[in-house]
Image 1: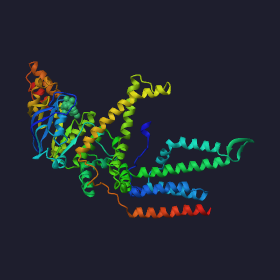
Image 2 (image 1 turned 90 degrees about the vertical axis):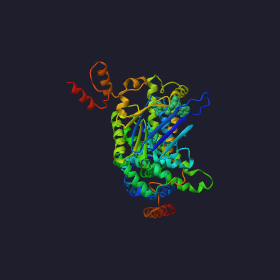
Image 3 (image 1 turned 180 degrees about the horizontal axis):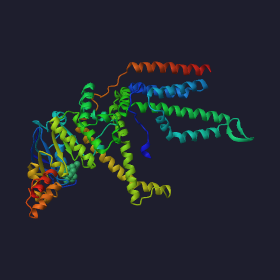
Image 4 (image 1 turned 60 degrees about the vertical axis):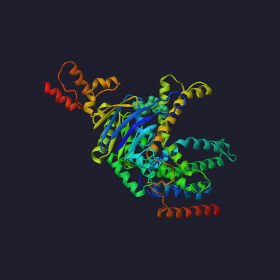
Length: 277
Length: 267
Ligand SMILES: Nc1ncnc2c1ncn2[C@@H]1O[C@H](COP(=O)(O)OP(=O)(O)OP(=O)(O)O)[C@@H](O)[C@H]1O
Ligand SMILES: [Mg+2]
């Protein structure tokens, strides 16, 4: 689905003398139907990487392929954007219309889809994210989680194979956060979509199929959540956290209590502790 | 308080007015305004008032909404009425044996002006209540289409307008947040000379502009991600069509307009 080969990228700045590569030799493959989480400290290049996935940015070196299409090929850019939807952090800054359904219709309108087909796509997308009842509402009166679901519907209406989420829950309260995460899992499980999630919340990353850890433009680890989060020391060294239950088990083990190091959910942790008793 | 602004507020329900083509609504509104100003005798006043009531009924928007829409201009109505009553020359009004500076002519003029303003606001609100901003700008764009042959970027202008409308509530909310944040830091917006107050606005406007530019930047990225590429080849969720209901509306309006002119000449 998404493939980067020796991807390097540097922003053009007039002020700095030396070129600083924000992305440095990134090799990453995201398979169809996979849920990949990307972790990394602030400013390590996660958003920059995400913007390469739909051709918003073009590599300074190396290649990015989307379904085999090279993002550098100019005549393909619309086809590539159609295949990879994006959802950003601030829901207010990605909603263009004053009525929910009109906003969701924005992408298919741009693609020149006929009206009745747009109607169909909009209704489908809104039902998928559970916002169909509110289709005639004004977006600015919705809650953060609802706004973000409208933004997701706006991406789904393009009928992409993959959606990239760049910190979609960073500005939401816990309720909005779980709404967005559930919607994301639904897309993966029911619609068989590929999901790339950039996040600072370890509990969210723990639900992915694969976790990629980045630091200063490089990919340091690319493995299952269980393997990644068992390396508590390594993650702490990068300024990252681990899920609370993983941390608990890590501290227990350090204190000499024999508990497994790869627990990710509260249930697993409870089971592990029950075993001890 | 700022959030209560009803500007461009769309009322999403189903009604005959909602189903009309925005182009016919815009053109009819313009002629309606002309009719309101042509009306100059009791019969024609009654006719435009009745017609306005008909519009309210056909829009199915609760009448309270229209009354709420009048609130912001209440001051203007009262102010012009007072000026008219006192400053129009004519027969002075006697009250309890005293001659007041008010005149009968002024009183009548004030009544006429107030009625005109109220009808004007109601008629315009009927348009914005029954037409979502996107469809409204769509209609304006189509009406301005001839200008695009003169290289006027009509599509881009319409897009800018609908985005501006979309961001009004967001920016108002932001202004309130920044104002409170600056007040919490001891900023004082409400006292001192006019210059002092203008100067006090700077710490509010600077963050507001910075954030507006950041928003514009993010919005552009989000729009591009959703395949935005300008107006060409773009289709619409609701294509606008001149339908049977528009034809009926236009015919009824033509009769009404003719009646206003004829009655205006006869009486
Ligand atoms: N438009 C730009 N021009 C120049 N430099 C930029 C630009 N955008 C980002 N950078 C720089 O590139 C680096 C990586 O930024 P990026 O936004 O990709 O980080 P990130 O991992 O998404 O961070 P965060 O977790 O804060 O979102 C940062 O050092 C940042 O300063
Ligand atoms: Mg980022």
